[in-house]
Image (cartoon, rainbow, N blue to C red; front, side, top):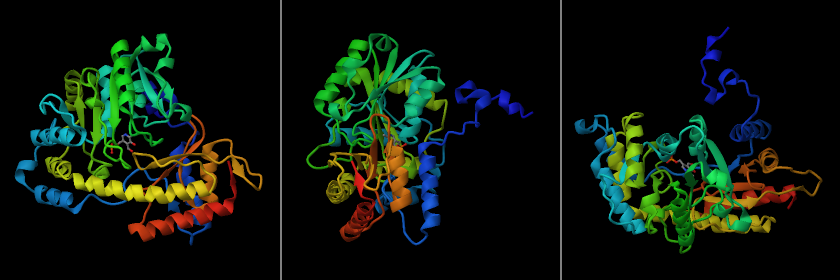
Length: 410
Ligand SMILES: Cc1ncc(COP(=O)(O)O)c(C=O)c1O
């Protein structure tokens, strides 16, 4: 007998680990893509499912990394980070979000991407039986770690009728009494919704009333357009007393694979995060942090990226609406979240967005990401492969032509 069966922790399923036959959403997409490629080798897949930028980091950022990579002073463990990066992050928070009075030594610590930051934060707060309130659909890392730690997750559905904001008034009292974390993410993946000042004020009040720590996942915070200025949770009075914000270099500076992020906000929680982090990793390579400083000083890079996404959204949203979707251009992120088709004129029915998404890959070689958590929706990303307006238009025209042939019904 394989004795590892008896060793695997219960949090991973114990003896049942690895035996589940359930196929997860992203694996299903991968398999459907492979099938489509095999069946139609000459038809390229139009990939609207990608969750990361389509181009590499700006050459000026890459140049700093290549200059710094071999320097002797950068070779050490970086531990909880270099002060210059924290100082650059503090200046960035002031310039972009108007958040001043941040002490880079107390209110900011870097992370190796925001994903591990979101994983470590529950370790600071969750005891067995405690609850994390988390918006759904959403980025699940904080929820997964809450469960690993013996806590529970209470889902806050993001519904269209509530403008994709959680209805905090609906959380039952017995849940509130055990809740320790409120995880929110604006601009939101996948709905594309951006926060309002009023919503953030409501969150501060809610957190104070119920003594709950707020984790605002700001991975897309700087990716905004159409007159919506980037908004930080910390710009609201009292936010520093109740929570932290997690910023990422991945989306605003096309640095996904570089793995760099920072936590900013409440001193005690930042300190708790720093303690857990110090016991988990030894920090991101100093040369990458120095390249990150260059990025944080180069706001023009984000602006150009946002202009590109905005232009692509104009093409995408027009095409989707002509096809019968009810698409609205978001004011942030690179995601368009639309009602999933119910079937086709020929009589095929989709009970879930997942079925529609698989059908689109197999029959039109168009990849999207389905969400069935709070209604049936498809997520189209504007990070598809194309260089310049003419190519972007060609991709969208081709997508439209292929979808038209399917005769979708809504
Ligand atoms: C909402 C959200 N948060 C966090 C992340 C993680 O970003 P990173 O770890 O690259 O900083 C992602 C990545 O897709 C995301 O969509």
